[in-house]
Amino acid sequence: MAEGWTRRQLLAQASIAAAVYTLDPHELCCGVNAYAQTAGADTFELKKVGDGVWAAIAAARYKVNSNAAVIETNDGVVVVDTHSKPSAAQSLYKDIQGVTKKPVKKIINSHFHWDHWQGNQVYAQSNPGLEIIASDRTKARLSDPNQMNGGVGFVDKQIASMPGEIDKIKAELAAAPNAETKGRLQSSLTQAEAYLGELKALKPTLPTRTVSSTTTLMEGGREIQLHILGRAHTDGDLFIYLPKEKVLATGDAVVDWMPFLNDGYPEDWGPTVGALEKLDVTTVICGHGEPAPKSHLTFFRGYLTDLVAAVKQTAVAGASLDEMKTKVAEQLAPKYEKGMSKYPIGQYRDRIGLNVEMVYNKVVKKA
Ligand SMILES: [Zn+2]
Ligand SMILES: [Zn+2]
Image (cartoon, rainbow, N blue to C red):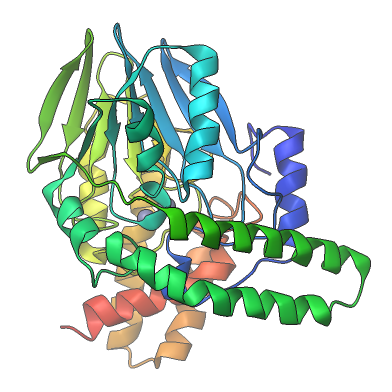
């Protein structure tokens, strides 16, 4: 059960979970594509996590949206991450204007993945002088035409691959066995076509300022620390920490479901989360899922550490990759299956095989 979710969100999640649309893992990135309603007023729920600080929790959509952190200062607003598409950023921007009319002064992109930056343009268009901050590694990847899973080049790659994705939905729609499936696929098709339209019109808006080590911003009377603590989900993860409010925004280096390891550094990731645990934190705004208490950092680090250890151990014992997937899944399940399966998407059993494979490729095979 997803504690803290509204009944409406739970119902929406449950109805889409019946038919999760699977893609090539490279396109899947950090979330899961799913059938859901087109982006609208219910795309985000603003949850107050401190005085003038909100977690914008994304509802499930076809093409997953990241969460955002919204930080109000004396003279403006700072927003962490901008989701997978301008329409989603527009939707959150409208929600923000419902709580404050102050201008958005800064956007921070936690990392380079497509579902965390493709809405940057919305804030830039409406807020002259907007500063967009990321780590130097993240900006380099966003600017790299060959980068997968995010950045200017990946926009074109998605434009090239979306027609195939749309054709596949159309074929499934033609073969739909009942009205319920048909309705779901029709919604998916509408959203996929709208997403392709948004990609074609996208004005990729890159960071205007980079940081290469931990930096403190004094922003309209509020202290905002930007921490660079090592490699984790990517090589450029930026952590946003408010020491007074004890709020931490992690991007996908900490999520409330199973992690996506394809661009990650399995052996570095645990220690990086360990460094986050040294901060005085009350609320963690994860890249995906509900706001979490500090104890979630320890749980999530434990999973990464135990996963790497279990894969290494089964490899030494001579297991094949397939045997490894089964053995590690069973070995870690008692400790992690429940906590990693709070939502109908991104669950333990959906992802453990790919997680094992990634650790095998990046840690064992490389050694
Ligand atoms: Zn993400
Ligand atoms: Zn990510």
